[in-house]
Length: 125
Image (cartoon, rainbow, N blue to C red; front, top):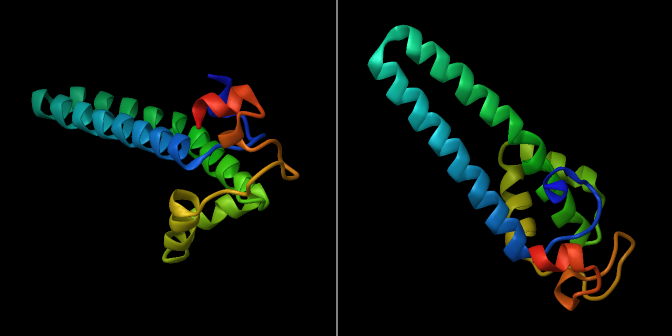
């Protein structure tokens, strides 16, 4: 659980995609819950909307943390994660985080997760 909220260290592409897909799945479930409750009654729909918003907000920090750690693996500052909020530029960020191999060996942000240097992070990679 600490890995989801930590902005330190590095993760590989596999861990990035697994975390991202998990977050997307949770958001989809929240939206389905909201629509299902809205079909029951207006009051239930409002409750479902609030619950869905809380779930989405709770997933915002883990989403940013995944991106920050992936940028760290590319030997870039975690501030590059903010590129994900800029339209069109976020496509560049997705390609960099999702498809470009990270720095081999140790960099300023930690050991290579693919080489098993930091076991906490290597298990997620």
